[in-house]
Amino acid sequence: MNQIELSAGTIDYGDTGGDGPTLVLLHGLLMDASLWDDVVADLSVDHRCVAPTLPLGAHRHAMHADADLSLRGIARLVAELLDRLDLHDVTLVGNDTGGALVQLLACDGVGRVSRIVLASCDAFDNFPPGLTGKTLVLTGKLPPSLFGLFMQHMRLRPVRRLPIAFGWLTKRGDAATARWMKPLLQQRDIRRDTVRILRAAAAEKNVLLDAAECLPTYDRPALVVWASDDRVMPPDHGRRLAELLPHGRLVEIPDSYTLMPLDQPARLAQVIRDFIDSVTSTTTRSAELGSSFTHGEDPG
Image (cartoon, rainbow, N blue to C red; front, side):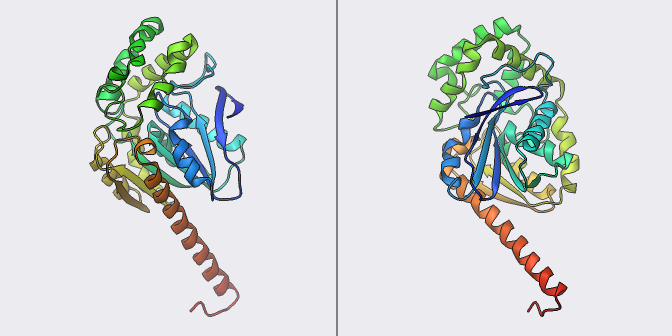
């Protein structure tokens, strides 16, 4: 993992490099960049994949005491990362809370982002999402010390597999969820950050309703990928998002809960690759037609 010092603190990120189209992949609450490991392993053959570990509760470096850890604040941190890494023509991909960040960045019109992918994510009034998110936000009302004691139960697999934990988020990814818990369980400052994140989420419940109002103005290519078995992110939300986005398209993936990068990584990688290829082909064809007209050639 690479590290970069941003305004909020030190961020870890993976970067496969290469000359292919650039993807930036965003994870959700109490997760880190390893959510995307299997997808990156597939896509990095012909794409540059950048996967940051954002300050969402499984990060390893405590943020500055004055850092804005609201959803909007973390979205601004992603925009800062794109600037600092000087990334261009980015496909911004978000799963779970990462998809909420993508919506906010789309509404902000970040120039470095050329297309977006929303993969089974928080949307509309589903923030915090489902039983899992609402339970977690309630625990954020506890002082950090008591929050830490409560979260010690997450060391146990039967607890992690409960619907109020990760049980309705992934069918096959318990090993990853156990790994994500370690920074929070072992570092006091990470627990402090996590409580701040959860309290900020409780205070901005309408943030994605506001985002939904601006999505119809997003005039760039957009893909919505939804897990057809999702029990936390309503499948109807996927259809609604695709309809709101002027250039949106919807693909549903079976036999997966919310965390498709864990449950169906190969299928998700292929859907993303097909989307980028189709957009690139359309752009190339349009450029060729424009050049033909400019030079007085017959485009037919």
